[in-house]
Length: 305
Image (cartoon, rainbow, N blue to C red; front, side, top):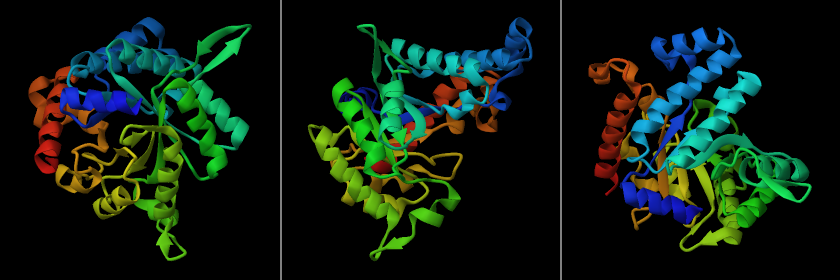
């Protein structure tokens, strides 16, 4: 799977993943009104509005980015109807040739982690027939419970040709409360990074592993250090754009081959239509998102290459 991601990045010349993290406040009234009129001002109507919004964006960016990253919490808040919209989004992205990173941040003890991994990346057998659950290509994983929580995901990755991104140093302001704590003279995130590199050896595909890492763009010096600790791990970089990260912060996240990282933007792209910079697009969310992708691509490539 990591080789598929690399090929898609090279094809589009865009080390970019679009976060499909919609909130109702980001969705134009014309979309919400239509969904609410047809399905009521209910979780079903709200979930449909999310799906219709996503579809407009996907239809206009699928040929210029390699991947998308739907955040499952935005869908779970509407219950089962929201999860159905999540699944519809994943399936539609696959139809358009996009790689899907499920931002699920799961992690638990062995048997539970195995079930999470099967549900999101693998398949179940019922009376000799196999069925896929959500069927993302990658999933984000919380390593806080240690190897017991991560290895079941790696096993599914190896059997199903999938990948994971393990949380190492996240972009949120309070991440340092735990992640920066010194243990044996090193911050915790460095210990986790070393473990990611170790875990990744069991799932190598060429120069890179199917076991990647999440490292926030808001900490460029830490990103460069972790790049050296995890030479074979692809880094998923949140925190670009709305959270303050910019292209000039990102060079240290990449390897000398120009690969090794993919940068996420969520609000900066899917809510671009609400930004004064893209006001000429009015409520055409797709065209505004497409232009925001081009601007992000130029910012990153000019800084990294």
